[in-house]
Length: 230
Length: 89
Image 1 (tube, chains in turn cyan, red):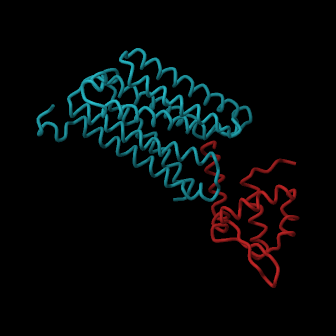
Image 2: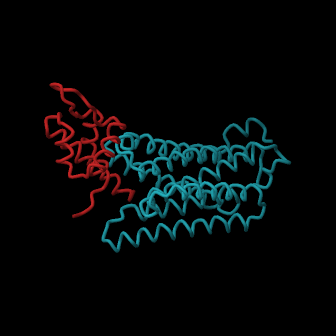
Image 3: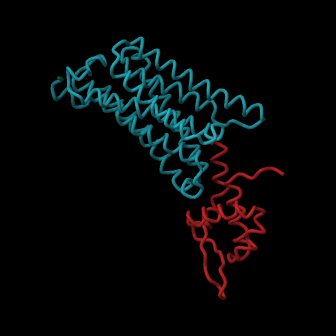
């Protein structure tokens, strides 16, 4: 454990705190900013969209908690978060982070796809089951290759589904406003997860990931506030 | 004829009531909405349930009026459509 003075505000925890704060505030502002539109319309797309951002806020809270635990116990790899070394707190936090960040992206995807999937509720249950499986693998597996593989596989699935939506919209000559922002969100979601699961993998690019991720959330918040007239 | 979306049908029903000086009987509302009797009943129940419309008795007859929330829906309708389109929802 670090001595108290050094622990007070290590540089990386300070940056992490600001980053998490920006994302959590943006996500909650999107959630509460769309409350009235949902209450008036009961539109399913709006429902899943705002829930996705609520889950992002929760996921980033747990993300910060993991960073805090890693820093507090001076842990360098995620394997040291195992219950044998520090009790259930670490793995439980990791499980919750993985679950909420996966379900946030699945809900965002569902908000775009719900009409095509005819509002099928089974899809939502499949997403929850998938998020639980991903979270369990993340805490049980201690091989970096497996963790990396799962996340790349997830990104491929999400990107492929979203690409199909984009292509169909293009064929119908319908403007697809946020294609690039959503794709960047999916890519940086994966990078954020990899950054937590395999801390050494993206260490050099951490600040860049933080800046671009914050930019993506701020762009979405700006669009939401502009459209809702808040 | 292009199929109307659920949100558009809701707006049309509320607009009919508003254009009728916010007081209309159920039968003329059904006729002007262009819906089948079954669909109208379904929408009527949904709109009442969501508190967008309200039944009142006027000169001994049942009438329908918009609630404050109903007026707010009409005010926010364009914003709703813009939002749904912007985020492809």
